[in-house]
Image (cartoon, rainbow, N blue to C red; front, top):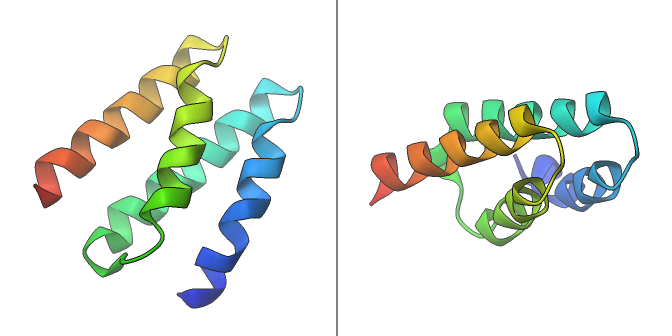
Length: 79
């Protein structure tokens, strides 16, 4: 799992890509990881939320909605 956390900065880099397909894939990968491992994430939340912060200002509505739904899931599941 540590390997994944060290790779999140790469997700931030890929999120700045022009293609909305790639940005959508990045948000879906992070969402899948959160769904599977939310209770085991300790110090990776800052990086995860920075990807969602970039998604929040995206021009593609589906990307914004998926990031919002995942943040809602995180708050409901953990707090």
